[in-house]
Image 1 (cartoon, one colour):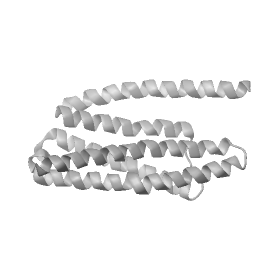
Image 2 (cartoon, helix red, strand yellow):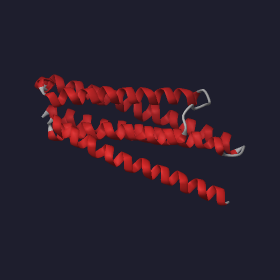
Image 3 (cartoon, helix red, strand yellow):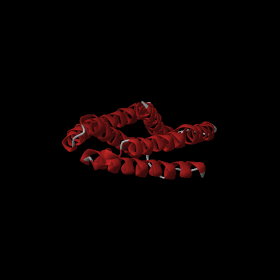
Image 4 (cartoon, helix red, strand yellow):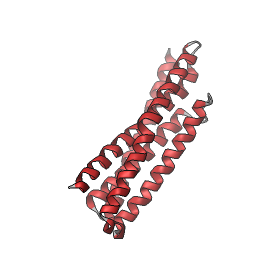
Amino acid sequence: MTYLYIKSLHIIFITTWFAGLFYIIRLFIYYKEADEKQEPAQTILKKQYALMSKRLWYIITWPSAVLASIFAVWMLILQPFWLEATWMIIKLLFVALLYAYHWSCQVMYNQIAKGYLNYSSNGLRIWNEVATIILFACVFLVVLKTTLGWIFGVVGIVGISVLLMLGIKLYKNIRAKKSWEQ
């Protein structure tokens, strides 16, 4: 019974961690796009997005990452045989990638805290899809418990990602055309 409570908490904090990762990049995009605004709007928006990023990052995203990891380790202590499963080893590799992604977001956050961001809004939109790919791979691995399952999941999400990138490009072209016409 304890295992199910720990598993439930792990799932909850994984969900809030990913929510934070998805939204932080959106805030970074808005922060970057504020550069295109005239003063005083630019300063006001950048200050607000920096504040929102700080609250999201340190009140939701980082605590969720830590708690999700604590509950994950706890589950593995209660069920150590999972570490013998190939799918779990692969999942843990994706978790390591997720932490690398999280750290890259920390680097971006640190830049914003210093008043700049060295990434384009389009690059950030594409980077946001990396977390989606990791999420898909982990979910397919955990649910299907096969190494082949994650491959199909990742291939599917890569296909969706390509469609999303095409959609982003189309959106960017439409947006550029509308601003050119005005």
